[in-house]
Image (cartoon, rainbow, N blue to C red; front, top):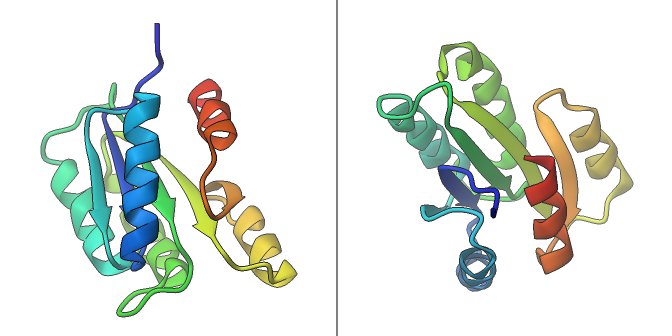
Length: 134
């Protein structure tokens, strides 16, 4: 049996990378619902909206870029901290960034809400790891 989550949110302002990641995740069958969002602000709204329909038995994955307009990944994590306790469902956040700055990696990995830091582009090996992790 393939492990699945209810919903995957791809939060990145890069259209091409979203297209690639959405195809990869669709083929992996990790979820039937894969949504692309272009900044952290709309991702926070999506979490709040999903809270209306998802239950404590549901899992949601967020693949979060760090550098985006309007609300970047760090700001998203700050806002997530404010709403986390109100969410009924389980949410796993994976930072997915092209940043090779060691400070970014260390900061992401030390954040209590980040499950893992992954370098772009997402690979099938990463997805297989995540499927085992969920």
